[in-house]
Image (tube, rainbow, N blue to C red; front, side):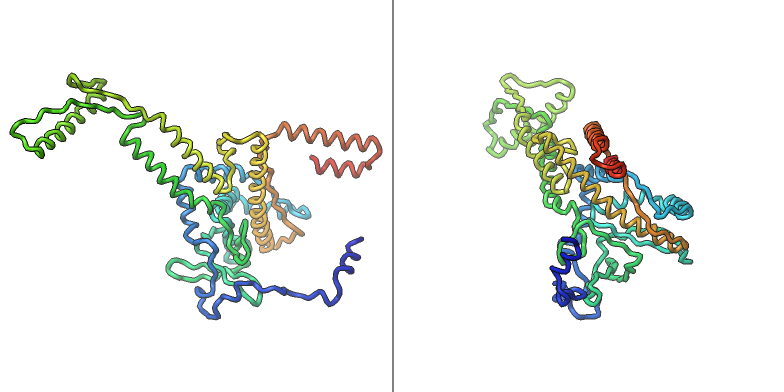
Length: 404
């Protein structure tokens, strides 16, 4: 059954109606008022979470490492394809990319995706409308959307802390989410789930730091003195006060002498070193578990950050595949943004190619030898089919193009 037959069998004339038949659930709850702030929609998560993620990436070593890993491996460089080839368009794009420092911009766009789950940028046109003057990033925490029932679209606003409202032009303000949920136009930050673990991890490491200050890294010295004799004229409170003073002064003396490699004591004094290294193992294991959970909740792979315990070679390969797929998803939305920007710039310059394609290079290969061996096997298979007359030269050429 061809497509035409399938279509005619499935649909009758009265079955096809233009426009949307379902209703956006948001429209039921939106107040009918002229006040923009009352009409805008909030994300499904607390808006302040975006700044909390920011702060965590600055201060938490695990999230900082994840951010660094994604930025360095995701920015593989890109090429621009003009269809059909146009030398003027090519030169204009090269000049524009140089002026805008597009490589640095791509790093910033990757950071926006990691931290906020979306690209949020305004394309600023030149005063004479003869090109794109610059690209500015707009913080997603200040972006609010209003649902327009008539157009069935989400309209963007920038609302600042002083309640100043800026209506944004959807033709020049671009918001592209990595992932959304139904009923919300806002991107979901990949690191959102990690916030539930950050406080626990910080409290845990702070407790370890306090313990190290009190007991030392290796252990502590336990010194037991013979009881001091009580003077006949001393009251019990005076005696206890003298004992406390003796311990404080002796403790200071021991600390000073230990730093010099000397320990002086009276006969009958017992000295023992209490080793706490044996109990550190459990603490280390717990901290390692918290770190792994933090990595996983930030949508990263522990195996790629040096956590190899408990991971088989098969699961390491799966983790690598997931990671590379994530990078490609980042590439996809950055490509769409750059393509739109390049097309707009060329159009304002009076250059109108059929299309502009942005193509990111593939992420670095971690199994280059295995991939080359597999590619060689596929090429030999195509050549054997050609030599056996199973496929034509043109079919072989197309297959080889796909492989290479």
